[in-house]
Image (cartoon, rainbow, N blue to C red; front, side, top):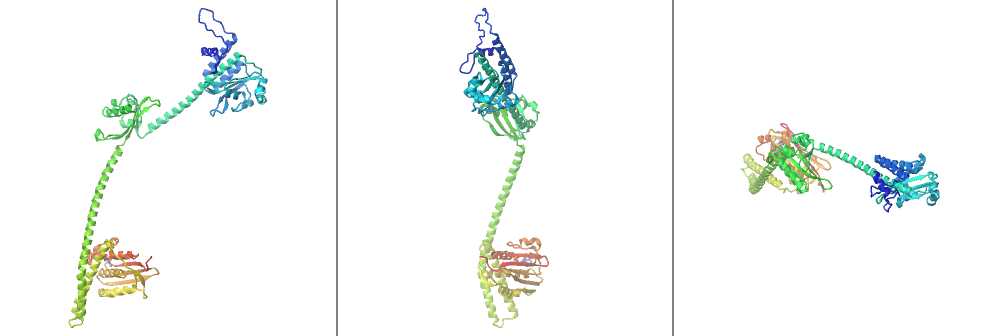
Length: 598
Ligand code: ADP
């Protein structure tokens, strides 16, 4: 260190802030001539600088550097107190790194100092030049307020020296004296040399501090990386450019079935000769192109393996572009693949079932459509001759009734013909209505009529069929006018009363009840017949449904009547319900709004 200090001392001060101490150190081109010895004072200064430099080599922080500089400087120039300030990160103010020679209360005065303030320290910093104030007159002239400040009163002379590093000013060194001081050129050069050495040491300490912070954060980042790599749910490996394992996490080691240590320093080809050629080929590709390869699926039957994995290969380079190696991420997807295969199979099965169901439904719909068309056509065709048959039978009855041939036997026979023809007609009507319902063509035509009158009319019409039953009618005496389709409601009453007769083969009581309030009318047909099994009830109003017991007792039904009843009632905004006890009878209840909501 000493020769470099001497070199500094020898150099002339120039406009870059370098200094010349005025020492004439020996430059002796001829080694045989006696060397001129420096004077004692200069030697002492050189020694002082030497000690300062030695002490600075042990100072590792900016604060320690400042303390050492102040200690040695005050000592060397016999200063009374001194301060070493550094520029704060905002660049707007100076903060003290160390203060020496001042008592506590005065130290506080050397706190943060804004650069706008008139002060030797701020000036030296701003103007980048030394301030030399040899006596109080000089101080009073430039900084009158300094002498009025508590810490400034005893200052007899002072200097402020900027700490210049190339074009930057790192801070300022301020030294104060309690005696006048004329700062001869030697002393100025000496103090400037100290400033120079201090600047270097400060910069070094600052760099070291920054490096320590960087190292600490690098350590932290590494610790974090270690944790992430080791705890990752996927396998991770780092290969160097020679394809040797540099790092491998526990998950991948476990997938390979080898301990971590067995991998390190080895190539995949040494450990897994069967698979390695493929892996190394990917790695080589990444090295050659510098591009990552992602989502490579390996394993399965084509790689003679019962495992499946997804591989990612990443290039690893420093920010400067130097290759470090290749990062590999391995995801074990065996389970996922297994589930995918099962899902695929299930989906295929589901699709096949869906298609079969669709085909069956289309066929069934087609069959129903054909059936309905047939029924509708057949019913239509039958209706004309049947109407003619009924008309002729009724005409015959009227004619016969006026003759002697109208015996009781003949009358029964002709009534049977008329009754059966009517039944046949009803069946045909049901079939036609069923077909109309299926194609959405059942129409309702509303007009006002008296429901009580309609009920008596239907009962009179059906009276011959009640011969084996007791009929009880419980209806209001006054008319019950409603706005509805009379003939359709007649159909409903027909169906319910006919069923009550049909499904109580042993006779019994049939009641017909009508109750009404302001808005609704309720119509109940009760019988004491075969009843309905509970499991049949939900299906009762479906097209062509017949309960097994009904099928046994009356095989002549076709299962359309209730279907039509429900449709007519619903189209009137009403509802039909049933309660029944098998073997004891049933009650069908129809509720209808009296008027239509418009
Ligand atoms: P059908 O009487 O021609 O079979 P319906 O649609 O009128 O057709 O009736 C459907 C089914 O409802 C009947 O087959 C029968 O099982 C049941 N059912 C209807 N009314 C009664 C009733 N009063 N008593 C018992 N079962 C009935």
